[in-house]
Image (cartoon, rainbow, N blue to C red):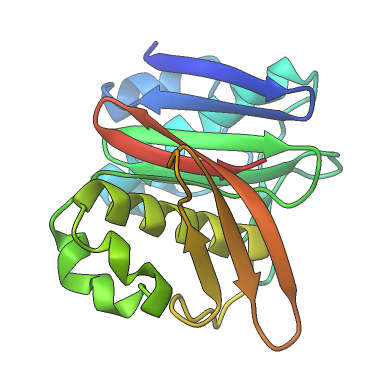
Length: 207
């Protein structure tokens, strides 16, 4: 099983990374997989089938670590995933061939994983604000800013988010921990975000 790692960040936060390398038939036969959500997986795109199955198996393994009986996930009206009747908040991300998930007992969870792709430079004007332009020359920093903004978006868990106006990132000096701020007309909150790398991929999550 290509479970890359399970990391207990602290007593309230745990995440895991899965490398997707199996055939879908193998995943669906795995004893950890339970299609609790009754999704007709065959209607999904082949890559989406793999992401769906691996993320659910990964989440079930994280649930084992916190002694929570996994029975699938639910989504609220905005599409944000939740574990029913659980003290931990959930967030999921995919960037083939990796799936990543996090459980956070402290509050709303956000996680994102991305590969530093040149496409980010082409779309940077859509998500970098004036204070973040300084990160545009480094593909690695650009990817980190994008990851953090995706993490902030998932923490907020609502629609109608302007990535330039509402999401603000300061990578600071170390670039492995940073400040992320979500601010709109009704809500403002600053978060401490951790940034890590694995096999050339960058991922971030809130503490």
